[in-house]
Length: 560
Image (cartoon, rainbow, N blue to C red; front, side, top):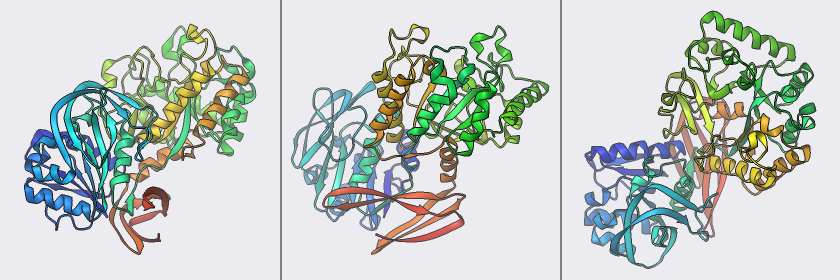
């Protein structure tokens, strides 16, 4: 039931490129399988035994395939194996491969935009048109009998096809696999669901993966409730109203709080929210920087200019937040939501002492947000600041958990879904409920499409500009828009724990002989899930199988 990905390590540049992109994505989506290196092996019928999906991932793969190998691949597909061709340089493939696939080529053309065919059975995206950072060349076709268009360029030229050959399914990209490099587009930019669902659609069923489940949460920064210094509609903040509305629709947010702006009448309500599992609270800063003359008296973990606090200063800082949280009777969220996500190295021992293991940072440790170097880091798995699930490069004892799409409009300085939707700082002449809903839903859907998690975020100062009815309309609109999308509401800390736990084990073996048998190795500290892909009547179905906590290894049998 494995996936076998074909690479060629003799082409060092091509191999490094596919390792950083496609192989990272296969690992991120929890695809069970291995690689076949053409520098050491050949594509034979023996190598394809038990393979449910073959991925031709590296540019130039066609140069290394001979006629016999091409016939072996197409023969395996006709018997039911799935094929995903990411190497769109089809002019380099053997003529027998093109003839067997029913394709005739013509001259290359250049693509700057990719458009999804809305009638396809493979994927639905929150954006049907994706712009590339740089143009890419792709094969032209004069004949493609029996195929359907999955993606097309700006001129309507096919850029990805899907079709069947015998009992098997094929997805065929007609564009360079450089598409998946950040220079041109990369993962996390809108096509991830095509990649992931391409695997699901093409693979022979049953097929097992270990991806992140479709969790959804929210995060809010600069939270003060009725202690806010930017109140326009106090009734939206009083009695934790805006939080209550989120809870009514099942959202369990992480709140980054200004600890010394919180009034005790609100702070004492935090205890009930925490006890009911309806919110998590993280010390954000003492007060909002913009309302203090000495901004370095506001942060907790790192001075806003990037200078580290001394150990003595940090002891006092943490004593202050300890006192506030003790007075309210609540604990620290395990996932730190720091103001500007500025966290100093000197603060890390204090954070560890309080049981906090997870960050949600798009910047490097020990750097001010304003420092250009803060944004230059290789955040796993793709080096994208907004999408990160993995150990923090500057201190691997912490695990970073973040799912915020990059801003589409470079003129918008914030990932806040309410930016430009309220009158704060003159951003909008009116409170635009419809726009706010669309932006929040986009953040959630893009996070789910990428295989991370759905999360929408905002700053409380903008919530304070809304009437209770306007805020309720926004939350109601988000909930209604998500009703037709498979998802599960979870807290940020639950998602953080799950994401880290998921990295501790891998699928070691999977097979199906009436019953499905799956073996995992490593360990799991909590219940996790496998994704089972099945097919009935030509339609692909997805379900989840529970895996209990285990040590070292576990073998499970499922009736399907």
